[in-house]
Image (cartoon, rainbow, N blue to C red; front, side, top):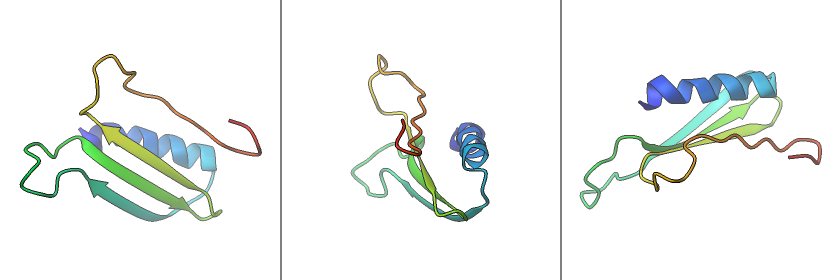
Amino acid sequence: RIIGEACHFIDLMRYLADSEIVSVQARRMGDTDSVDITEDKAAIILGFADGSFGTIHYLANGAASFPKERVEVFVEGKV
């Protein structure tokens, strides 16, 4: 699901930054024996050529009542 769904957020961040992606860092939750299910829980940080960065928190372990998707953009003193 991360590949099929997170790619849309990556495309959106690339569009909003209007800059080339120059670095990627990712970490999945549960790289230990104490976590049974590791799929669908990850953080992805993209660095852009203009110095900006974007972060995707893709987490499928939260409450069902919490909205599944939201976007926050911070630019030029605005949110």
